[in-house]
Length: 243
Image (cartoon, rainbow, N blue to C red):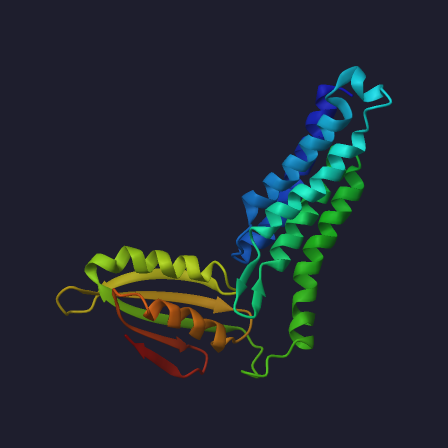
């Protein structure tokens, strides 16, 4: 195994992990471009280390190159647990954790020199996210809304000047854990002394008023927030929550 061949395998692992991460980044998921690329890179490096990094030891009866590769699965399990969130009876992040697991498998295949299989695996992972998403929405109808069409939302939070940065950070943090895609966040003076209005615009693949109401409800509990109002721009009602 030459250095050039090892670099080629590593490069393929990085590239395929980036392809998987691009789709996650576009969907604004917690584990996106860099995370999946790093997972695939680490898996490829560990496989290269286990197979070629110990010189003569790899030929001994006590050395098994598959041991390090097997431990990658356990290691990704701990990493994936960090992106799984429990919100009441709802569990979020399972798809992200499973995607990271697949990224590790793709990286391991690339590190082992199975480049064509790694490329096919990458295509399958991306296809599952892209092609099965509409099918999942058809099968899993949401009875609370009855509307599976893409929806644009906007909400406005009025806060004191001192709490503006904190409220903006809370909005970004809260939306990062949901299925919404944040389009913009802006601030404007309300005309009243010491008050600022923080406006956010976001998109959803389907209408989910309950999930947005949960976010806005938590935001309204902040001491610095004076009022919160959200609206579904595609035919939705306007809702307010005063605090």
